[in-house]
Amino acid sequence: MLGRWARPRGTTVLGTGLCVPGLVDRGRGIVVTAPNLGWADVDMVSQLHATIADLGRVIVVNEADAAAYGVLYQRPGALSATRDFIYVSGEVGIGAAVVAGGEVFEGTHGWAGEFGHMCVERSGPRCGCGSNGCLEQYVGQDALLRNAGLEREAGVGELIERFDAGDAGVRDAVDLAAVSLGSALANALNLLDLDTVVFGGNFALLYPRLEMILRSELKYRVLASRWKDIELLVDEHGNTAAAIGICLQHFEIFLGDPNSWLEPELT
Image 1: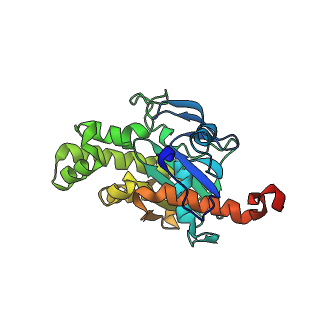
Image 2: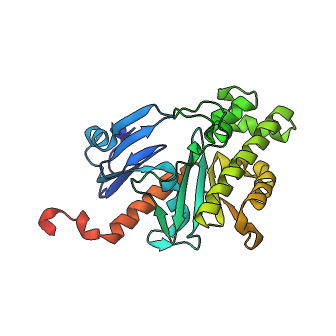
Image 3: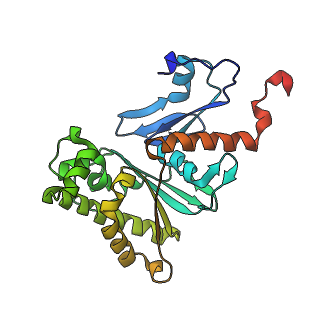
């Protein structure tokens, strides 16, 4: 796709962002591991620059972290009112981002947010990460379809149709996902002292079918819920959430140090 792209005349590309479902070494632009893609130690910055030269500054970011920027910022350089939250994105894998005080928490190595690999059942099914009983095996897209007795090709659309039609097997799978997700989120909220969760990806589509059990599980398990209601929000950006977020993140980097983008002879 990049090989077929041409820069519009009269424009300058300041940067390019790649969102990846996995652990990223942002300093070197390397995907350390992305189990659902079968990637390990992939130098994406070098590969992108080798594909096309006119990309500006390339950054590689975890997709959930990127999507969280789309909630954190209402427009380039301007924070939104939602500045303390957990962003949870569900596709085949499950990613999360922790945002506190208007900043995305990255952790010691930049790998914070691997929410899908939180253990919810020690004797649970084997996960692509090599462990077992991970949340992903209960709420990830492939797991949901498998537990509902549907083929992988069916997709979330058919899952929702059958749920709304009253299919008992599908409803059991979605209810199990809601309990598992609620339990894992409760642990995270208790640990971090946050009271807002934003759902993206498949969770945004499934939210009306998850909400009742989710709220019940969080009310039961989050200690602070006795004094402060937990706010549950849905990301309205849909499939473009990570793309919008990484653009806003690039603007943040640019506005923080615009001189670093100038040509050397102009500095």
